[in-house]
Amino acid sequence: MKMTGKAFAKKLFGARYERLPRTLLIDLIVFWGLYIAGFRVQIAPFIRILMVCALTAGVMWQALSSKDNVVEIRHMLMLPLDRREVVFSYVVLLGTYAIVTKTGLLLAVLLAVSAWAPVEILSLVLGTVCAVLVAAAVYVLRRYWYVGGVWAAILIAGIFFFGERSWLLLLLSVNGMCAVLVLWRATGYDLYRWESGESRAVKGRERDLEVFKISKASLWRYLFRYLGCHKDHLANTAVMWGVAVVLPHFLGEMAGLSVAYIGFAVLTLNTPICILLSCDRDLERAVRFLPGQERAFGIPYCLFIFACNMTADVIFLCSWQIQNGGVTIWMIAGAVFFALQSAVLSVLLEWTHPIRDWKIESDLWHHPRKYIVPVVMMLLAGAVAAWPVLLPVLLVLLAAEIAVLVIRS
Image (cartoon, rainbow, N blue to C red):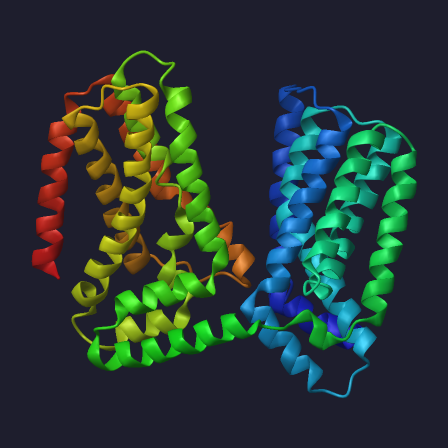
């Protein structure tokens, strides 16, 4: 187990485990800064435990679903190793990665801003370990999706009802042992399995990529194939559409129609579609291999992001008209500006500064660089909401920006 664990650890934390001390130092700085500041927040114990467990389980699931990790464990299974050794080494190292790199920051914040009783800290530790084990067990049983749903519902209900009692320790221990039993019977092959539909989508996407290298004409098909391979991107887009429906209700209570621009900026948070080059290294090599790819790739990709953003903005405007009324031509112009400016900046950022220092896909999905463009859009939305006369100026600047980019490409 030591050999397999070391192999997985070097993949996740670096050849010399350099990521571990850096991450722990950041967590310590965050904790100490908040603690000495004296900032305190009253949070119910079950909410704190539920937050930590949900984040840990979500990151663990993302790590288990990572394509890079699928390749790693498949290569490991080619060696004459004990199946339980591979399974538990894999789960333990991915759980350590999830807790240290992602949950650790949340733990630092919660421990610094709220008071904890000893039994709550013990429940927190058990809950974090339980989240790792249960997420891995549900992933092994993902063919029976209803098992995972029932299991998650039982854990959430238990945390809700017993969050402040010692009974929670028993509940978490029992669930952890059940997860260990599931993993004990699992094989390494249970930790990677692509559904047939996804396999077809991936093969089709790879064919499109080969065609794109030669003809540069199948990027649109590739983009839709890519969305078909990543259902989480489609889910994120659907969530943004839901936000576009309900957001006018909250913004309509504020004074003035200019607050609608804030809604357009919020709807640019559909960040997964804005990191296509970063998460697909094969595509990046393809588009940088031949000359003239700035225009061949950048323009269709920009239009694709613009179409996704504009769809959410249209839903927002329709919902605004139904709930509040008074949609103006400047609101429509604002929707076009924020959708297009966000797309242009996202493509520029991907082309000039793609994210390359990620170990597994979960690092990429939580990378702070993804939120640079939405933050810029929020700042512009605040400025336009305060001074609506800025919108015509920004539209002119956007037109000039696009003209310069097209000429240079």
